[in-house]
Image (tube, rainbow over all chains, first blue to last red; front, side, top):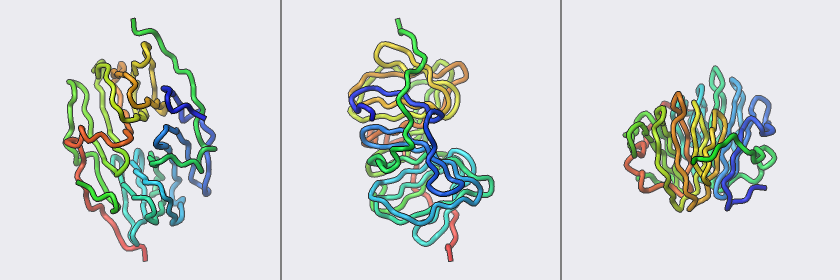
Length: 128
Length: 128
């Protein structure tokens, strides 16, 4: 568990990946008020329609994400983002080359805590 | 202004960049509970020590970020992240090749609203 009053460092590469469905893996970093999940979707891998009370802000870092919301499919490419308010049903699918997405959840997704990166001590040096 | 009850799409490429200091530019996406800022730091460009009441979760996407916090410099590479609680003084500098960072602020940084991407209508198609 992290201490919300302390500066914390993490590496996604240190986190155990969670696979909510085949072809999708996620790793998480938790702050006090949000979690930031790095999510990789293989080509065609699909997260079925679902909803949660958390607000979600997704940013596509690589590839194309097909976001399904409001009865329509939306193709989001690199540097494109979507804000899904809490309680709104949505799903997602990896585009032809798959995709990598950073999903911010407010508040943090405690149900994904098992995918949380452990705090680490990064290389550092005194500033003086 | 965005409607926090509605799904919203954005492109960082549509946002006007804000330059808080030379060599640093940022673009923002706002949800109801957070803003997600895409920040590019040129090599050596430095954001001086500062603090704000917002919690900040930064994730390095490209290059190396030198984060200054607690009297030490920390070199963060790709897929590394830092959680800075509200009120904690910190600063940053672009590494030798510069860097790109996604900074999540909880709550959203209203003082960076001028860097907000406008909502957009993405290409979409009915799912049925």
